[in-house]
Image 1 (cartoon, rainbow, N blue to C red):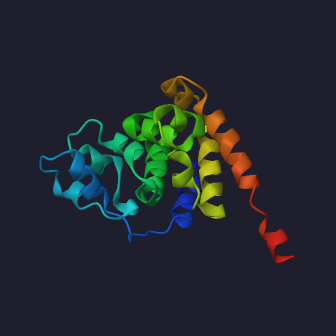
Image 2 (cartoon, rainbow, N blue to C red; image 1 turned 90 degrees about the horizontal axis):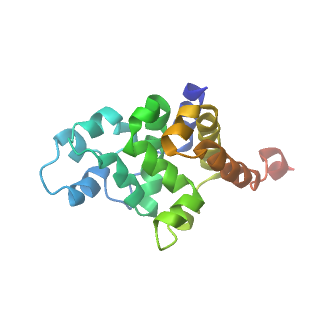
Length: 175
């Protein structure tokens, strides 16, 4: 099931690079020491992997995801989702920062300003469905709830199922 959702994510999120800085540039602003070339040169979400992030020797580099602005967040969201599906709770800060940013309640508790709405408002129906299906996988794996300290999968699934239902089905659109 995870592999099918990974493929869905890969197909739903284009590799857009316009209008935003790269992850390497973003990470470099937080870590002024030289980052390894493999991290500093990350420009495509498809090139980001847990193994590459670990090369930085920065324990919390995966947590930078929670600090991204809307455009950069949407650009790298598929990388964080696929890393969590591939590595489970071993994804550590990658997992934690992703869960916080996909949960409107957790996001509101983390930031004094509304970061959730600007990040998620331009998601396409296909991207929203990919997030919903990601949440369904998380909900079926109890290790995520154990690591998060609450039933993160059910909470994400509850929100993203409702959001996906808000889009008309392709059959209704063509009618």
